[in-house]
Length: 115
Length: 113
Image (cartoon, rainbow over the protein chains, first blue to last red):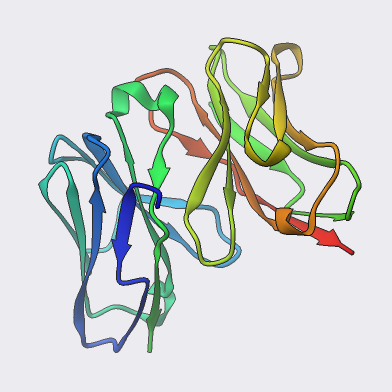
């Protein structure tokens, strides 16, 4: 158990569906991140939340909508996705962006397939 | 510009052989450096980190890395590869305590019997 839990582990959705990915951490961290990992591509930072406030949106299409109701929970709401959005979506947390010398703790990811 | 580069997207070694995965960074200030490992369909797990203490850092699973400022490198090594070491390895850098981590492109390690 890494301390960062992502659900579901696998998700298959149609292009017209709406679904949500969930991330939960019990490490007392204040910063949470969404990353996209596609085959043969580098890790792509999508969103950063610090103390529940979004501090980074890395030019992500609006069909991805993040939500951070508190420092322990992070959601990624998905709607009208495209097949190229199929990827492993990773959540991570850190104490806060000012202490990245401690590194990030990652969840196991959600494998998303868009059909 | 500050960046991190992993030389070799794929490395193949025989079981029992030395593992060497390369990481170089570009920075005008001393960085914080990390190595992560990712097994198939899993998240990234921290192997080890350098945060300006000892330049030779020991991590989990027998891995270690040495920070060489003159070479701007932080290569990952393991004396004897096991089949279970087959995974993808990511080098990551934070260029000061207030910046986010920047990840390298990853190196896939294959271990042959």
